[in-house]
Length: 285
Image (tube, rainbow, N blue to C red; front, side, top):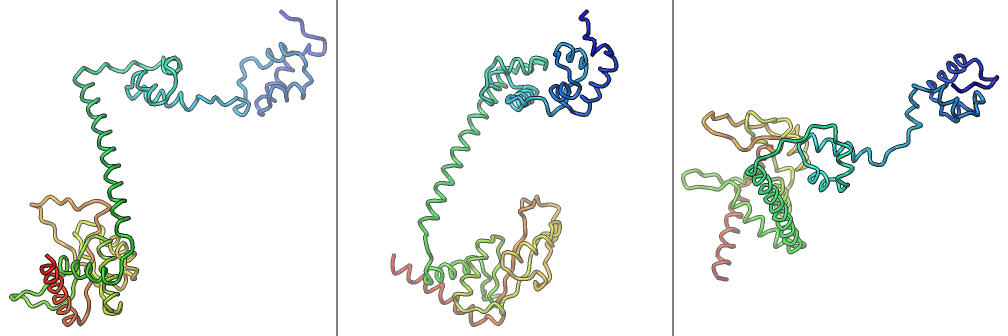
């Protein structure tokens, strides 16, 4: 046993002092300077069994990788699969996860199914990328929209989606219903172009009774920049238990109904514009 220098003969008292400083969060150097210990072996004995404070521990650059590797191993991945995911060596992976249970071996059919699924996911990603490129190119092809182009687009849009007069049901009024915010924006731009004042417009939400009507009202209010409090009473569609609805979830906001007041004359003009377009297209053909 190493004999203590005379000035360190009260080992237990010194150890108690050193441990108290350690528990306050001091480093070895700070303790050495505080109690004037210049013997490392003695300091080691005094600190034996007492862990260092967290702040003195050097961060390990691979700690995050190690945790990820362990998580992947617990998910059942092999060393090769973990290596592909993290880009680290298999020797490191082996060291990090050696205490974890080995994943169950999948049968050949299961492995083939997973490989096919991975290939298909990759193919879907490529297709989606191509789809987005095509859409972006199409957007660029439109460029700016002149007044005549907007006018013609609006007429066609109304005749496709707006209410129309029938011999058995006279409805010479301009009412437009749609669930697509983009369509609504285009329609409103067209109304402005043809001189319909905003004061003549009224709005109403039409939505299934099981949906969040208040949220839908606020959504459409934001889209048309009109206070939801000015909307007419929301129309709730009754549920038919025999049908399976697909228009559900947070993205379902029902339809917005836009009515133009005192619009019989406008409706007749729209109908005339439409048949004018049809006639012009026929002559062009």
